Amino acid sequence: MLRIILTAVLICGSTAVYAQELTTAQRDACMGDYQKFCKSVTPGGGRIIACLAKESDKLTPACKKVLAAAEKK
Image (cartoon, rainbow, N blue to C red; front, top):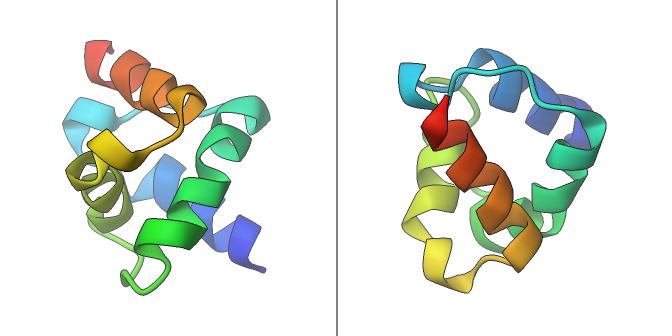
């Protein structure tokens, strides 16, 4: 259930800067970071992406790479 919510938020709820369709591998790269730092964040409106970005210095290298790639699009 959590994976479905995160997927929906990452795909539909992201801001224009982060708007992109993420692959399963990209979503998986940030799942642990989401659960560790942002699980209390209410989905929608790009709040989870913003939370992950706020915690960027603590994220795994794989998730940092996903966020950096999303910013470029």
